Amino acid sequence: MKMRAAPGRVVVAARWRAAPAGPGAVVCAGRVRDSAGARWWAELSPAAGAAVMASGIISVGLRLTGRSTLSLVALVVCAALWCVLAADFAARLLGDRRRFRAEADTPAALTAVAATTVLGARLSLLGWQPVAVAMLALAAALWPGLLFAVLKHWGRRMPGAAFLVCVATQGLAVLAGTLAATTGRDWLGRAALAAFCLGLLLYVAALLRFDFREVFSGAGDHWVAGGALSITALAASGLTASHLWTGWAHTGLRTVTLATLGLSLAWYAVLMAAEAVVPRTRYDTRRWSSVFPLGMTATACISAAGPTGVPWLRPLGEVLLWIAVGAWLLTFAALLLSRAGRRPGAVDRTR
Image (cartoon, rainbow, N blue to C red; front, side):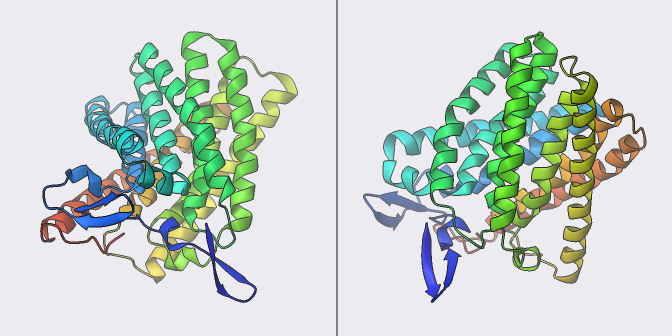
């Protein structure tokens, strides 16, 4: 969706940068009305799916570093949030089609796919392969329609959420690759490679449309520019570790893993520096899209250390993981404070 701001200049519609309705607002037949008695989850925007993604990938990282108890706590939070958002997704699809269609063509809608794949990958590590397979099937079913709707409305000078086209696709690659390794189904490994290659192309396409001013003015989703490369590196590390790819294919995947991981770390440094120059301390739902890349970069480093033969990536990843955990706790605390300070039925101005 685009709108003209001045001759020769196209900007992204405001609804791509924020939720279409605030807390306590219910969209019905094209009208927005406030209702103190409305379902509390009707306040949620699609961007809230990043909270599931952040919790899930931190759980994966903690599991890989042997912090099983903390990992399970993060998994419980991730699963609970996913269930709430899944219920809301289904309610909008079945009972509020106008709002569903309005949100389905925004990049944030793809968090439904990404969140499902991240949760599925963690459940696979837990040994729940049938559930993880079901999560992969659900994500794969949602992915084509949402991706097409988003790409159809792409424009120029887009926010960081545009990179979710890559994140959702690489999420499929990560989960398919994880299941290929745990179930021995080689066709899943080949499907993971196909999704990985498409994800790379989608990253380039999003980068060409990204508004780089978002680095200093973004509300949080600008971090996905780096997080998309991190999940690409995570997918590539899983493919590198697979027995399916040997010789030049293995060498090529190892090279791509290190290259994308290096670029994601460069983004990490640039975005951290921008946060120091222009602090953004006010809570915004899109801040969860900052926490997710922090956790994903850490997990990618830890996962890539073995397959690439670069052992120092693991301790680096462990340090970055605790930064991500701290960011998750701060963001969750900011969420609670923002909700506690709002009047019932007030419109949320933080999104």
